[in-house]
Each structure stands twice: as structure tokens, then as C-alpha cells.
Length: 527
Image (cartoon, rainbow, N blue to C red; front, side, top):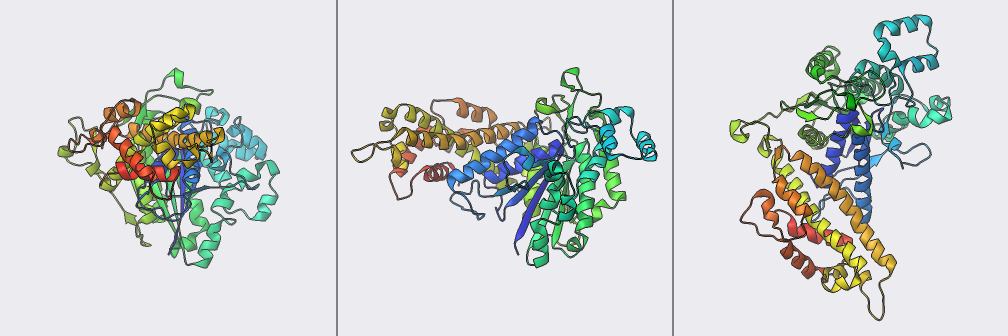
């Protein structure tokens, strides 16, 4: 049976979990399987975390094109970038901007509850009801930066705009300018999606994972609303196992201190002091509302060490580092897609190890404390080693294409890239040089982001020496990859690697960037 995968990240934490999943799959973690369909819900499209996640996806897909990776089977000799990711096309057939992946329940950046109610022409009685339920600040607040820790606003709008049940006839009655946004979920998950054909055939299975925090605004608003709507639409298919729902609930794992420098226009903001109380009430609500009866697997993740974050209400100023809880969420997503799931409920848990596994502050997390930690450690370390070394070769290629005389010092360049050779039959053109340089730079750009992400994660996840990793990324001098983990027995220096790459460059028929990447990975990967 083939499994069709959908991943929905809700809010900032959901988007960061999606990015973590991208990085783990880039590193070859888990099995690729069928393509994973990605979507994120957040009204704050200018948020740095969202923009970074989307740019990461674009870079990932560019790397796949350059390396000509188009299948979904794991190549053990080069498992990197093996998973395909798909995003929703617009009705016109294009998928070339962030709106193809990030959906907002808010029509435009000037929207507020007052404006939305005025457009919907609510009755006087309805207006009085809303004034009873919402404060004046909540009614007038502009929603361009999200719901600012007020899930009551978000749940109303998401419930109103998240409409997977729409038929084509319903969409035809929607003004043209709104059709892409309003019909988004019907085309991705609902009556116009491939899911209908899959469950009608009955031979395959659909797994939908939803991830979001329950202590803030967008995630807390979206998680229960979306789970209920998907369940209502596909209750029969969920009951008989053709569709399986997974849910990752992120408990508090960071905090911030409010400051005027992080404020945007408006008066509302999230209060970190309320995170625990918000989570307690959310969990109670999920149980009392029967939400846990709708899903097959639930993963509840948090961190008793709260990371200090800079305060920002939203927009480009909300630039949060990657954190361990989001990486654990990515591990949980992969587990949900690949684990055997019965129709009854499944509970998975992991907890901190004993004091032997911790540093004296309890802040460092040992890889042994993480489910499937050995596999995670190997995938991340292999990718770090590959990234550091590949980027050195990419930097050399920039020098070589700027000064062709350097080819003699670096014979691997012509060994792998025959178009850079010059002889009486062929002269390397500027176009050849630029193409090789630019393709290598695209992969370097993704790997830079991966290494930055790993640098954030390893602030607390104890799998390598961050200082050594930073030094290796910056240095132009000799280094030994064994120093990444303090392995004195491993001697794999930059000089050794260059010699091995040089020696393999002239062998075999396969050439090009594709084979260069495979050769580097084969040399640096851990046994």
C-alpha cells in the first residue's frame, strides 16, 4: 500500500517545524516514499520565519533539479535530497510565490474584525453578540501580523475561511480576485483534490499531519478548527482507515520579555507569562471537545528549558533561531508517515534522560534522549560534513572560473567538468564557466542555510562541537573533520579530501556536479 503524505504547519512554530522537516529530509533522514505535500497557515506573510522556510524549500527544489533527483526512492550511495516536496498550484497552474504554500485566512493587510464584519453585512443582533465576545481592541486590531496571542480572533476567521468542502459550483460564485485563496483547501485537501480519487480507489492511504503550538495565537486557533473540519469532511474514510490524521501539539518551549522596540502598529501582543495557562486550558478543551477522538496519532512536545527570544510582534523583525522542539516535531512527522498505525489511538512519548545524560545545568540534550537518535545523529553529521567540504569546493570553483590558470592546481575541476577543459577541439566558453560556477553556488546556498540551522540546533543538542564547525566553515587553512566530534582516531583532513576527489575525478563515464557531490559524500560520510 502506498502512503500519500500531507503536512500542514500552523503559525510560526508550525512553519519552523516544516523547515526542520525539510532539512532532515535533505540530510537523508528516514525514507523518502511518495512526495510530501506542504502547506502553512499564517496571516503574517512578511514574517522572517515564514520567508526563510519558503526560501529553503525553493533552494531545496533547485538542488534537486541540478542533481537530477526526481524519484522518491532512497539511494544509499547518495541519500541526500531524495524526498520530493509539492506545494499547491494556483488555479492558473502557477506555483511561483509564497502564496502557493502559505495560506492566510485574512484577505488583506488592513483587515480587522470590524472591517470583516462590515463586509459580511452582519445583523445588529450578530454585531451585539460579537461586541460581547470581543474587546474593542480585538475588534479594531489590524491582523497583518497575525493574531498576536489571541486565538479567539483566529479561530473565528479560520473557521470562516478554511473551506475544504467547496464544490466547483461554489467557487464559481466567488469573485475572481478571491478564488485562489478561498478555493485553496478545496483544491489541496477537499472535494477538488487528489485525495478524493485516492480514497475512492481504496488501494492507497492518505496521512495528514497537522503541527502547531497551542500556547500562542495562530496555532492555538487553527489546530482544533482544522482537525474538526477535515474530520467532518472525511469521517467515513477516517473511520475505515483510508485517511489517517496525525497531530503534533507544541507546548511552550521559548519565552520573551515584551519591549517597545518589538511592537508593531496596534495594541495587542502575546504574553509569554500566559503560555503555560494557555496550554493547560487548550489541552483541557481538546479533551472535552472530543478532539482526541478525531485523530489516529498525537505527539505532544515541549521543553522545560525555555529559550530566551527577542520580542517581536511579527513581520521581518520576528527572526527566531531554530530550536530543538521543532526538530523533534520533524522527527515525529517522519515517524507518523512511516510507522504502522492501527485504527485505534496511538500514544508515543519520549522524556529527558537521567542526570548522567545531562550537563550540570540540564540545558544540553544528549542524542540518546531523542527517539531514533542514532539515525538522526548520523544523518545530521553526514550532512554537516558534506556541507562544509562541498562549500570549500564551491569557493574554489569561483576562483577557478575567475582565473582559468588555476585549473592546473585543481585538476578535479576538469576531471569532473569536461566542459572546462580547453584543447584544440574545444575551448571552454564563458557560458560554460558561469553555468558550472552558478550551479555549484545554488547548492552552496542551500547548504549554508542547513549549516546555519544546525548551528542553532547544536547550541543545545549535543552531537558536535559548534566552535569547530564554525571554524571549519570560515577557515581557508587545513582542518580535520574528526575534530567535529572530538574523534582523535579519525584523520580526514582538507588536504586528504582534495586528493581523494582529484583521484576519483578522472575515472568512470559519469561526470559533472552530480558525480562530484556523490564523490564528496562518499569520502566524508561516517561509516
